[in-house]
Length: 246
Picture 1 (cartoon, rainbow, N blue to C red):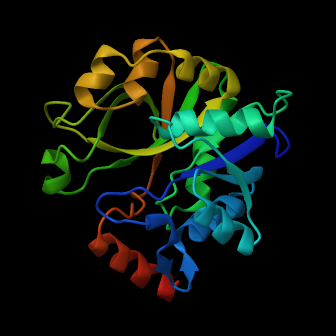
Picture 2: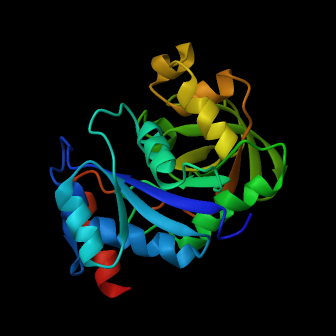
Picture 3: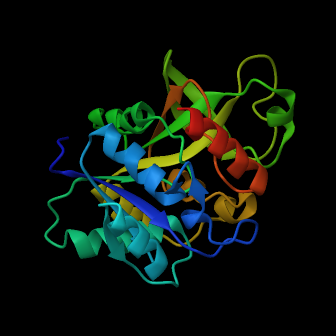
């Protein structure tokens, strides 16, 4: 993988029930989406593009020197949005690795983005993602914290067997909080978006289960901590404190 055959796509849209206009909210003098753009650029793995259906988002990104591609407003998921973006940006198929970085992760460490991509050096892996060990009882029990159940391959890597909102696996030992950042082989992304939603995906409301049910392999790099996802006003204030002092 090289910087010429890898692209980072950041899906972003204005609609958000708990935090309207989220991508454009100010954090330390910059719109949140620009912070995510900067973290992705700092990863140094390839071209970075924001994929959006909102002209306000596009204007904010271009005003700060970023690249944007406009996509449909009708996509059911971020995966569908990045696939449309990919086909518009690279119809010839030169890009072989696509990284999907959520647009509400303004504090994501650039090294963690690279860690997900590095997993694809193993030819058996279709999709790379991230996980961090759960440290609090609240996270263990919360259905809002998605747990990655996996087989350890080494001290910093798991092969994913299942994703769940339940408190799992049972018994002593670590549990892992799944971080929803994905590095896809192009063939894996093409296959994924062609599949219908799967039974377990719909039951758990977790899109990544579609890939596992279809026999695709997902590996996870174990990182130090879960990056702050900005979903509520309290999250926004936390992000402002972190980035104001960094």
